[in-house]
Image (tube, rainbow, N blue to C red):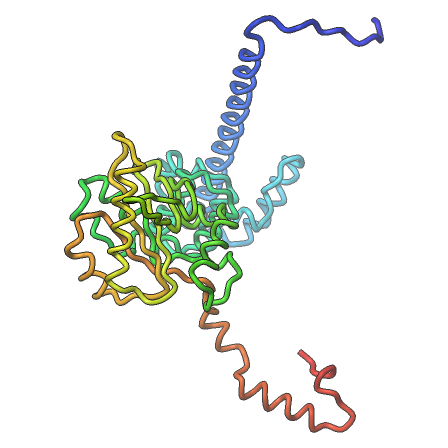
Length: 358
């Protein structure tokens, strides 16, 4: 056999396109194989967990049987991971959380085992778990994104913005539009203080546009910042412009650094009209507006939207989330810190700048 490299001739016409399609088919087959293996593994874990539950309930097997089972399975399948006592207990909890085998096959078996452990560990009940499981499947969330969405209380915030969508949009578009908006929006990834100004926030959002899109939710595509509109020879600038792929419409987002005022909707509506007349095409649905403000009075916001014919929503934004209550109570007060500093300063031979212990 010759050691000389094979000289490749120029590929025939159409080869590059054929190769590209072949690569896509191979990658698709690999993904399907991975999904199929994952599905079988999750179903196996559910069946093992169900068997443990059944035997413990019907035959009175104690908790120690899990330790024995873990050891026997590891000896029988030394190359397989996942048969630790801890994971077997998760299998039992998994089967207990999802007693409906048909639902497991159709839904949660589509999620990797690690995702299912997140749902078990971090969520309290079946309905909440079902919602986050469906969202993770629909939007192909990684485990880290799933954790982040749970920690940010996405379920409670989704569809919570005040809007006039039921009165200005036909169903089911109005339902989808309502579910597409949240309240409040969390911008804690920006690293800004609560005193940040509108333009400062706007700049940071564009700099962190990937995180911003994740917070906005599935379907939003970024169009531009400070988008120029020429109306009657005068220049106007939209803070942020997006396009929603599912709603098939443009979304104008205006930022207000203070409390919501009814007159803010006039400016937002003006921009929406300009986008409808100058930017959207005949196949796009009417533009939607979202006003993001630092705070709002719910009743005032509902009144302000009452006579508006354009689809609008009003929501708050949070730059920095407050500490959880349980953590707040464990922190020393300002008075306690001052007393401790005074005590250290009074002690002879000490330096309050260097000697304070955590």
